[in-house]
Each structure stands twice: as structure tokens, then as C-alpha cells.
Image (cartoon, rainbow, N blue to C red; front, side, top):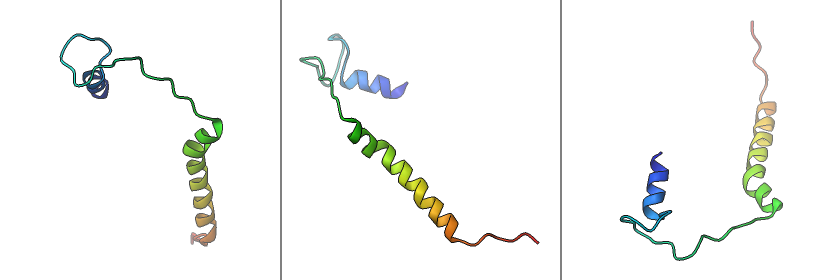
Length: 65
């Protein structure tokens, strides 16, 4: 709940009260391509899984006596 309170204090939804910034116009709607979304969010996760797989596969399995 704290980040929402902080966001409403810095960038208010209404014009009443004490605020740091006052929005003059509505915020723009930002769109990105699916390639950019994949590159920023999914590619790092998939690459970490692949690297971890090869690191684990490289080590020998410990034999239990």
C-alpha cells in the first residue's frame, strides 16, 4: 500500500491536496512490440534456465553409497 500512497503523493489523481507534481495532461499510453517484450522479460529468464541446465549437466552426479 505504501508505493501507491507515494505515487499518489508525487503524481496525484486529483488536483486537491499537497502534491509534488501536478499532471497537466493525461499520461500517454505507451505500447511496445512483442519482440521488445520478449527480449526484456522472457529472454533473460529462458537464457538463465538454459545456462543452469548446462552447468548442472557438466558436473558429475554424486553417487550415494
